[in-house]
Amino acid sequence: MIIRLENVNYIYNPGTAEEVKAISDVNLELGGDSFTAIIGSTGSGKSTLIQMLNGLLEPSSGSITYDGVPIYKEGKLTKEEKKALRTLRCRVGLVFQYPEYQLFEENVLKDVCYGPKNLGFSKEEQEEKARAALSAVGLSENLYEKSPFEISGGEKRRVAIAGVLAMGPEVLILDEPTAGLDPLGKSQILELLKKYQQERHVTVILVSHSMEEVAQYADRVIALHKAKVVLDGSTRDVFSHRQELEEIGLGVPEVCAFTQSIGLGDTLTVEEAAEKILQMYKL
Image (cartoon, rainbow, N blue to C red; front, side):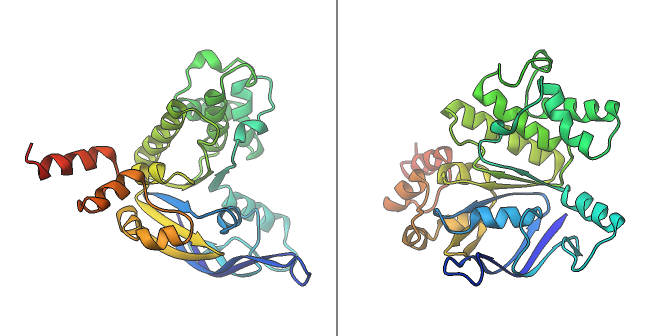
């Protein structure tokens, strides 16, 4: 799936004293076999942007299309048109920050079945999709009959992500999926997301404040500042713009800053930095 945004704007409280332009003249093409990170300081427009990507918010102006098909239509819609638009938007899954707060069913399996159930799948299909999603996030079957409130925080986060995966999205958007987790939990969540993206050849879009996470897992980075896209390119290219990133309150991963400071150029991971240092000293 290819999502295209053309001259997209979003204004909160238009025509009032509280009017705020959250997204300004954004043109983007997203999709394909990629792991894309969206970065930006608080108030830059990240949350507004991702909510427009799956139809939760309608642009104040501009257009958003999925594979060339508009996800919004003007005027009164027929029942069939509404169903078609809903199906189209389900191709893009959105996982909010702290998604475990939305768990509510009596056991893990039923909770993950909820999305496929709403899409009209039979009970057998619901369970099949739920089990596949739970397996994809690395949860064992001995947890399926447990209450989602009896498992660990990291397991809850995985269940919540599985609930979105069970609907079979072609684009998966995650808003700070590692927030509140310990280092091991963060690493496990990101590793499973990267594995899922590589095995399914889908699009994963990650919103993150951690430049280290972005450097390690993303292959493309989009930086927002004051409602506009200010940088968009490969992870290595974007992090080569250290001054520009620092000017908008971000920066580069610590390992990248270190290797830049000693003249070794841009590095994205500790392993890459170690290799360059070994080469420098011919060790």
